[in-house]
Image 1 (tube, rainbow, N blue to C red):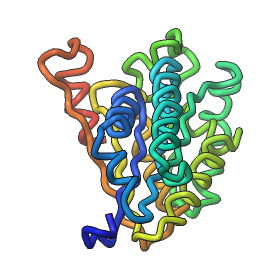
Image 2: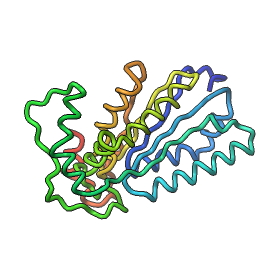
Image 3: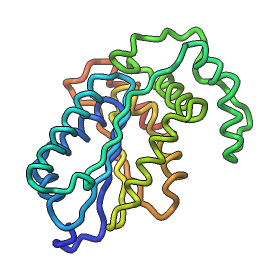
Image 4: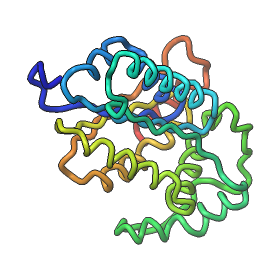
Amino acid sequence: MSNRGYSSIIHMVGLGGAGTNIVEHFMKDEKTLEMLDQGSTRLSMMAMDIADPDIKSLDETYNKILDQMRRKGVPQDRLSLIARSVKFPSAEAMFDFVQNKFEEHLRNEGIQIDEYNPWLPSTVAIPPLAGGAGRRRSLAKAIYNLNYYQLGIIKSFTNMFKDNALSSISSPIILLVFGLGGGTGSGMALDFARHLRQAVGSGVPIMALCVLPCPGDDPPAKGYSAFNGINE
């Protein structure tokens, strides 16, 4: 990219199934490999989902691309990927975190709360997580924050991504990609964006690309649920 006079490089984060799939397709594109073969461009990618299959597919694609880079003589450190699926140790631990601990973490960050209302009641049904959050943004938000604050897993991933992105010679721009119709990406996006901003500081632009529902999506992905997600 430096040969073309670009001074910035976009690093990508995909949340949920839609975001993870977009990261994978971007990595597969021949133009991405061409870009990595030019100058000293470095790309940092990250993807996070509750379900496992899309993360596994992305990991497999990443390893294939690294092999292509090796055969072409492109330094493999020009492309880095952090791809993880996140869960929770038990439903009881998650409900306890939301009801009794999350507020304290927010106050420790200086966020003023007049009245804290836990958004995830202990009576909510937990779907099989093999397919993600099952359109439940509230569940995805709880799983994300439990993994960030109490387990520290996502905080560690985010700092690793930050270190990779800021090591680029070109000025970094971070693109956050997620789908509005599902539950995982849209349930994690706002909290993740806030934590990412804390990690990279105020000097790095963070942009978001939100994939809206389409006519081919099932009914729960559309209508009021999607409209409400835009205004959350």
